[in-house]
Length: 308
Ligand SMILES: [Zn+2]
Image (cartoon, rainbow, N blue to C red):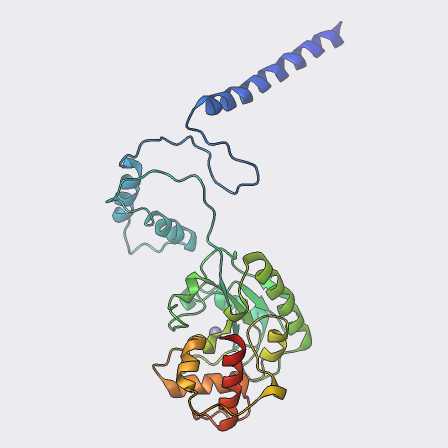
């Protein structure tokens, strides 16, 4: 008898729970405006949206709240990000929430060297409030990969510079720091771990081959990382960045304009000498003057024919 009573109590409890969960679902499904979303769709749609366009008072309130925050108060990175997120809604316009969306994906990868002596030292530096720098990944000489920032977040690694028409590279790129003092060669284990990471990023975010660049490409004259020993040729062979074909090198024709070719590659030609140094550090490696020799021009011409 006791067993039968227990059975009924458990049974009633279950009926109550099921009815609670279905009540909510029924309400949502009864709304004729509700769009049925497949589980595969990546959307955040927890609230039934109104079909009428209306001035969003809530957003206005959020914006005015923001203005009341004392700018002298030190905000955490999370709080700063949240404030910034709110400024993406412009209070002067009407607002109607879209329901189909996801996060913007990174479309560039920028490679750096840390100019420090260990992975631990680099991580400490990135975690000091006053440094104002960060990167998504740090790769040690032993091949250990430490992720410091979600791929979808905006790191502070590129700074001032230009590549093609892009000046705000932080907004569109993932930053990878290689533990290196600026002079040493990059050990095999480190490059191997980098290749695996690049492979993952390239596939996950459909990053084009030409969009794997170095910090010195983006900021020639200001930055010179990764150092001259970085194996861009090995990377290009795996589809990350570009490289020339030594056996097909031929003299560039007289009509070939190297400045135009460098500009087409993405270099900012405001300081041509700095660009040539950056180009030569990456592709020539031996002579690092700011003047293009015939061989340098032949390398540039080969890259130009092959990729542009
Ligand atoms: Zn850098």
